[in-house]
Image (tube, rainbow, N blue to C red; front, side, top):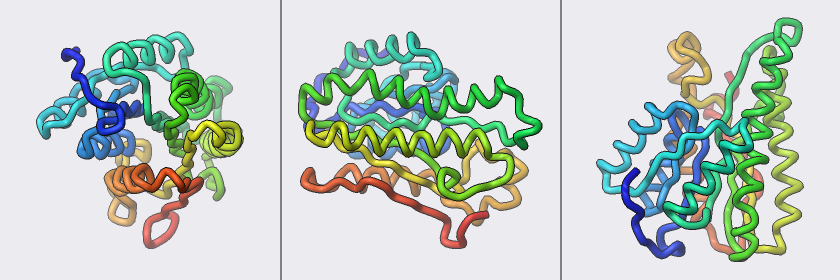
Length: 245
């Protein structure tokens, strides 16, 4: 890893993005780097994280990679400890890590269902637990939950994914009420169809032109983050202009 860079947290917040190796997570990480944040990049695929880091460094941004499987409590704890040691306490957490096994309920295995829930929902819980103590101590912080319109609209073969994203939204709503008094913001974003690898190459080739781009979500997150501390945007639903696929 590169040597730590000393920054003022207020001017250069420490931002931890999970699922930062591609798609929406990568775009959110790059967007935060462009406004001067110190970005901690986490995902399971270290090689792809290194590519993201090189892009950010090439543009003059500050980041470091902290490979992490959010399904593992020990991995999450170790990644958080390394982030704090390298950058300092986390100011912004983006719970974005997510997977999908698009299968009918009758076709989905228990292991596949558990894998989606562990990644998309439990992983967000584990990461949130790590950052909350320092945010509460500082009386500030912002946690973004990247849910999905699949939490509110139903699609065939999305049983596990919809359950995980609806659970994430409910978890965020309860958390928001618990941490308001500490000055901590919790924002849930429900993106519609966004061109990323989770869709698979066939769907991207067929419908990609109708989809939003990952950078659209990255720009949205920055806009929400930069709002006045007097105001909290709690939930945002965004869809392609043409609607759901």
